[in-house]
Length: 350
Image (cartoon, rainbow, N blue to C red; front, side):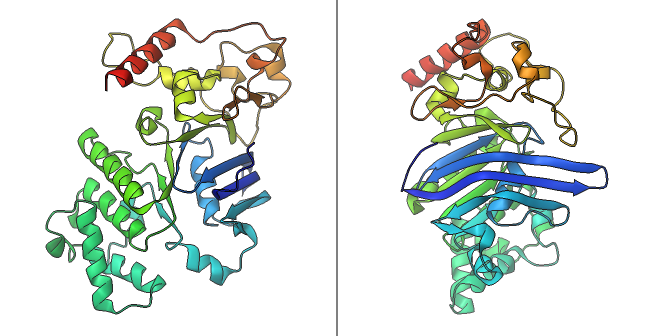
């Protein structure tokens, strides 16, 4: 959508399928993503929308079989990841690009001490002495707020709490000073206090090291103060993209309206909104707009044709027939308008 030379990541027309015994799952369907150096992109959507598959493809970690990248290009600093030799790709993984996975307990090796795992990651990509690598590992544990890092260096993953394991994963991901950090649901299943601390740490490290970040979550509220731009995904497609301010204060797609409406609001006594229905089975993708069955504003055309992107500004696009010049005028729900007004007021007060 944009012609920008300051891109660290440029994904074009990416299509990924999972070829299973039950049929072909169309996990990602022709998405475009761009990320500038030093910026944070939020990738938001329900479970099964294609967020994690997209993230794994950047490191070419989509499990094959059953995953198959059918089409598209992924340019990292102008280099095509999908056609990169394996040796060069291995040099990038954990070094130029690092990833914080959803579940640190399954990502950390239970048989090795935390410090040894971080040290090994450093030694894999940097020709330095083991003593220097250990020193770097201790610095990273301290940076992410691990108490008594010298002692915890010798602990096993099962001796860490969930929050501390997540911090250890962040330390490992940042130990080789990557240019791009992919954070896949890094705060899922953590209590809100630990969640806030981890988000603050990622923001602080991003600022101090000039990181580019892709932050993946199902919760728009989490990326409110994290992302510069947000892509909203549904059923393997991006349905709306814009700056964080545009997505939060001027959302245009009914699915984005629904996500924003389902965020808890402690300032009102309104009943928590839930999106009706369930995401479609992508083995049998629906004709037309995949969100139509759950969309109270759906028109006849939504069941027949997929909507193209309609331009709202140079940075804001949404794929909904409601933006067609001949479509009936539909405004977002009044309750959401009031919520957005409160969010704006709160931001102005801060």
